Structures are given as structure tokens and as C-alpha cells.
Image (cartoon, rainbow, N blue to C red; front, side, top):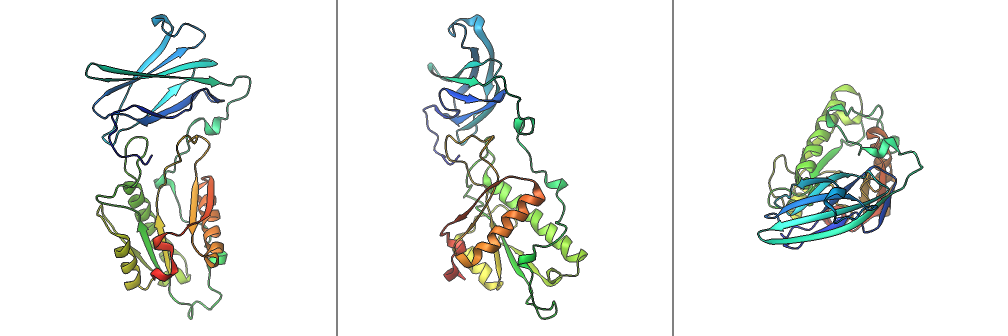
Length: 289
């Protein structure tokens, strides 16, 4: 989610009206006034939803300071009326949508719960990508100078998770983990990586401009720059279906390496591929270095 203004209006992003799913639960998320109380109610649409007796459950939703909210809601019926109730002072806002649950098909147990990437269980890859290895003898190959760039930081939060955690936090954690893994590979394997120099553009929560990141990489004479981000899904995309790893590049000459990055990351982490994309980012432009 990229919206950061504290909108007083209740904005329901997902799920859409008259949405149909094969799962027994769904996410309800969007934006609200962080000062308001917010509740979600699930009602059997086969009954009169104004009848108190048809109300299945009422949950209070936590609204984060950014205005984001997210809540997992069970869908006990084929047709479920979901109501969001926002209360701010004497003002009450009610938004209602119907979510249909498709029955008669086995639920995909693997995607019933979102897969988590557990950093503590991640281990270095068993082999380095062959297409990234130098064809020169190790003694003559230039040492790798890798700059790992945790995106955003400080006053620049990036996007936010459904629970309101800023993207900058995840970027830094993954960057530090990657640096630790690569240092471990350096000590374990007799490869050109042993002579590699590994740098971070930031090692704590502070703001670093794009120009400063590029200047840092230039001073370190890096020959590989990897910027780490966690992108928000476009509004109305299903987070149970649309998720995974994406890699971005600018020049065609870099595409084979970017593709190999994507394939190996997904193989080792067992995360899905979201895609390989060509973009003209500031930190991936050749004339920046």
C-alpha cells in the first residue's frame, strides 16, 4: 500500500464487491482515519443482514498510524456479507460487500496460509550461478566489489506492510542477512568470492539520497550493485495469488544476469516468481557509474 495521507474517509481496497474465492478466509484491508474505531462484521447473506441474530462475528480492527488496516476474516458461508464499520465520535460509516465462497472444490492447503520467508532458516546456495562466474583463472579474475543497497531509510519509509511496518525495515534486514551469507560463503569456498569486497549503502535506519548511494558505489569502485526493495501490490490484486520475487534491470546486456538472479533466488528460497522487468531506475542506469 502506497497511500500515506491520513484520509478521514473509509477506503476499502480488498476484496472487491461480489468477489468469489475458493478459500475459507480472506484479507480485508484498506485505509481509515487512524483516530477512528474500526470493526468488521461477517453475516450470512442467506439471512436478513439487519437482523442481529444473523451476525456471526464482530472483530475490532487495528488501524495503524499510517491509516493502513488489515484483518484476516473467515468465510463460513457460501455467500458472506462483510461490513466495515468506522466510528469517529458521533459519526458512523458503514460499508458492505458480498464475498462468495466457491464450494465443491478442495482448498489448496499450501496457499491457505501465506508462505513466510524465515530468515533464520535460510542457508547459502550450494553452488554459485554458473553464468555469473568468470571464465578467467581465479588468480587473474578481478575481485568482486559488491554494493548492497537497502532501499529507503530514515524519513523515507517506502511502502508499508498490512500491519503498518515500513518497507525500509525489511530492506535493511534482508540486506544485512545477505551480507552475512556472502561473508559465510567467502570463508567456506575457494572461489573468486573469497577476494570479494562487500559494502552496504546504509547499516542503520537513516536517510540516504539516490545520489549519495551512487556516489558511494563509485567510491568503492563496485562492479555489482544490488538494490533491495519490497514493493506494494497494485490495488485490488489478490495477495494470495499475486506475490513473489521480482528483479528489475535497465539494459539488455544485464538481462541474462538479472534472469539468473531471479531463478536462483526463487530456487533457494522456494518463493514464487513475480517477474523480470525492464525499468529505467536511477540506480540501474549505466551513466550513473
